[in-house]
Image 1 (cartoon, rainbow, N blue to C red):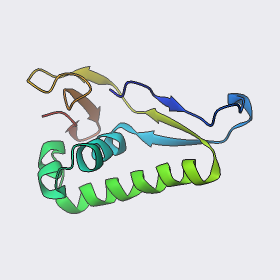
Image 2 (cartoon, rainbow, N blue to C red; image 1 turned 90 degrees about the horizontal axis):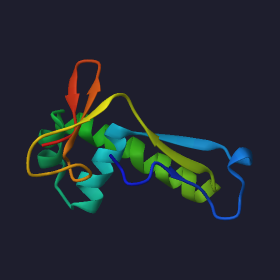
Image 3 (cartoon, rainbow, N blue to C red; image 1 turned 30 degrees about the horizontal axis):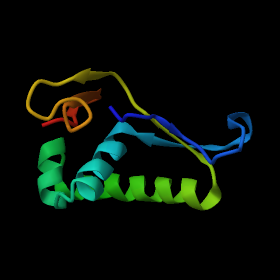
Image 4 (cartoon, rainbow, N blue to C red; image 1 turned 30 degrees about the vertical axis):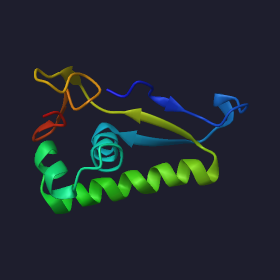
Length: 108
């Protein structure tokens, strides 16, 4: 899970802001590709999705973050049920798994 799940411009009341919602899959794609510097093929393997699907998830995440920054909207990170995963990653570093529809997402 991300350390914080809500970001907004300073000094603007939350009640007057539009929101952009970033899913946990999109958050994980950003973390792997942009923060960890992982190549898309390796990141896709880790997320258990195809490379083209990973690319689409990452593109969607980039557009949402850009929208929030450019337009000054709030950015909320949310998703379905998340459970800690076992393994060396630990929570917040790929050590969580997100249950969505067809299978598990995220984590090692």
